[in-house]
Amino acid sequence: MKKSLFILLAIFTLNSCAELQNVIDQLPQDGSVLSNADIASGLREALDQGIDKQVSKLTQKDGFFKNELVKIVLPEELQKVDKALRDIGLDNLADEGLKVLNRAAEDAVSEATPIFVSAVKDITFNDAKNILLGNDDAATQYLTGKTQTALYDKFHPVINNSFTKVGADQIWANLINKYNSIPFTNNVNPDLTDYVTGEALKGVYTMIAVEEKEIRNKVSSRTTDLLKKVFALQD
Image 1 (cartoon, rainbow, N blue to C red):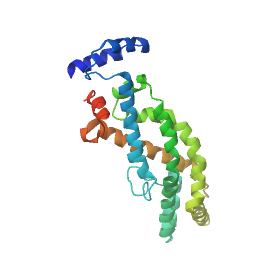
Image 2 (tube, rainbow, N blue to C red):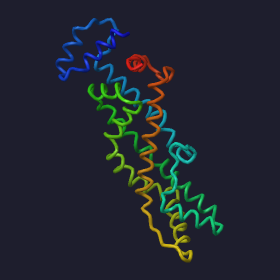
Image 3 (cartoon, rainbow, N blue to C red):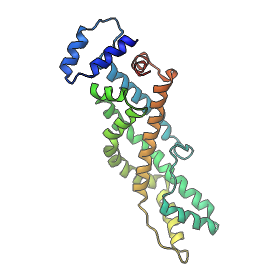
Image 4 (cartoon, helix red, strand yellow):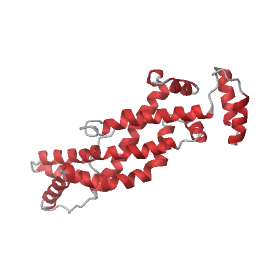
């Protein structure tokens, strides 16, 4: 095992893909050394597993709302709205306002999967090398860098539509109108679409990081032979 890891680390120091392939071609083909393609494929499998196992949970009812890791709470500006409404006995309206923000995120997250799949397919050997030797969330950070802008652009209109679909637009219009009618308060008009879009993205990456950490630290979470072989190199 140590010999295999030493050889692999030596390979990592090469800058040229051509040089890398020449060295790999000269190694014994006894299955003890993983090729660059194997390693990249293993990292793709790890990310695919995170997307399939964890992100899919967020699309279910209460996927955000009852998951304390990703639950969307009110922004600072709206916390005073929440308190003021509760102070005048409108607890139910305040509770519903929070719930529908999470419902909108749950409704929209399914739009993320095709973008993630495309990013995962593009992982190169150099990407895989950096991910494998990186921190517990290195794969998640890679995916964030590759997808964040595209996901925001995709999520923003979807969240806006989801607000209408789950009734969040009407609930929040009513909630904010009631707050703005309370004497001696300053009117608010927050951009809830932008806020929920940002929070939904954070939630998606958080759950992928959860699965990545599991795969890196628990052999039982490596569900395929390739995952076992690739991540054994970092053990």
